[in-house]
Length: 440
Image: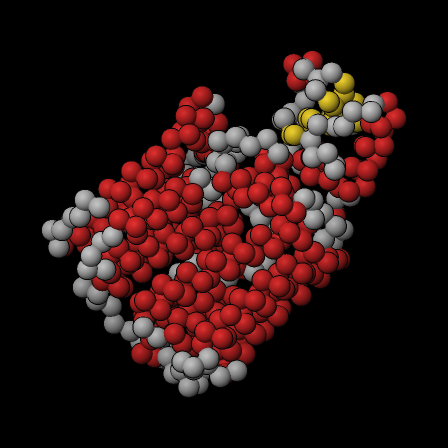
């Protein structure tokens, strides 16, 4: 495959289309049920609120929109996930094109992301990590536009505020990107270096906080439950002195491990690993702040509080790592000799979905093997023996009750765990194992 300026856009569209179709089709054909997080977030979507016990509300909002349009068709939610991935890729390309003024280098920056399993193997599960991807890339893109443009526009500031808010409402860890760009980078460059500040920047901040107000009100009235859940997931309560050393080292080891395929692709892309770094290069500084600083802040968090950093939390953090590598080594890349790079790319591009399909078909005890449809049919049958009314409420944990909420035609509202108070509010109900269904 020959990459040149004339066919770059065509190749990008071909890549994005195949990626979207392939990663929608493979899980659709090989999974019997939607993954855990997707079912859980769909359960939240049946009872939309400004927040939930584990995460803010954006992921449930997007899923519920698709459910209202398409209903309980599994392929739709695999497609939704790939739409989010593809949008992220598009804005990585647009950002790279603004940076390089070279579409071939921009395309290579996107293709490199196939070497990171966050952007292929794990994407069929639409969750809070995938939900962040387009907004992460959009925030970077519009932040760069604000910095790169001589004239800062109200529109760009407004859009940055919107995308930053939706990203934060997808997952709180989005704040690491916002700190890296909108606090540290703009402080270092605009205020310290250029002694420059445009009050239009405050538009982004105002929009950001206005959009967060409903969630912040919900958070306060619910005793900050999402924050306490996040802290509990880090293992902070049981941390010891050694955890401040061990967990950061584990974190670093995992980051290096997941970057091995990316490193192999880079090896076949770059002729000589020689480079010069100048801290006066604002483009390089921006790339460092959007790539290395958020990861560094995560590492610092682990060091300071001795917490575990779960690998999947890092999903959006590497979206622009390809741009950084290409920018540093661009003089060492021979665009006329990319055969080795393309070969490795194609191997990974083909291997990932086949590996996913193999695991999905051969391992039979996964969440995606759960017989959700069959259990929903049996539950409906048992209910129909005694009741004519539809099931409009389901109680239980997000997985078992969430599957019923998703698979039952009446789309009952998931209202949390089973309690006597909740059962007393139902006019009729039936309990089977660890779930209860009922009608108000």
